[in-house]
Length: 158
Image (cartoon, rainbow, N blue to C red; front, side, top):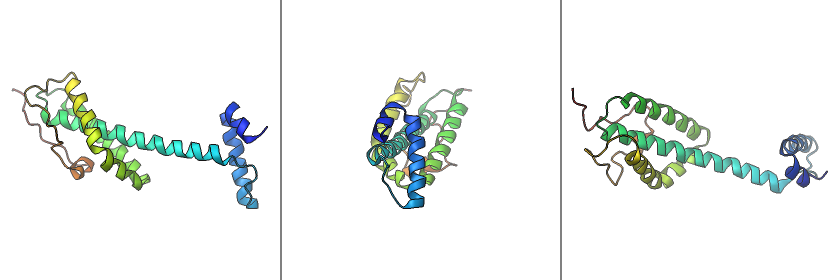
């Protein structure tokens, strides 16, 4: 069966065959059976997945930083801090693994902030006492700093 047909009918088998072909190619310095088009598609897809992950993690970090800073709620505060810590750690690990993805953070920041602000507004948290600003009130260095968290703007009533 040709590699192109195998890709369409049994993806796992295709991956195994491509790995075997790559190993043979490395040994023989030949690329006769390599399904370059589908291989390129799959590799490109992996990159797209990483890009979507960066945007998702950034949006979650921004949303929870907004909740920490602007919500009068006290109970979920530690949970929001934990979410920021976890998402930030995973985002920084991804950026370390693929430094070129930092540009995604910079390029998609405004879009991610709009989504995060909307998500924070629509959440169960009452943000009516301290409206969320239209421009993000913190800088990118703060957002990526593993030790930084904003101070709550509103302190819960004792």
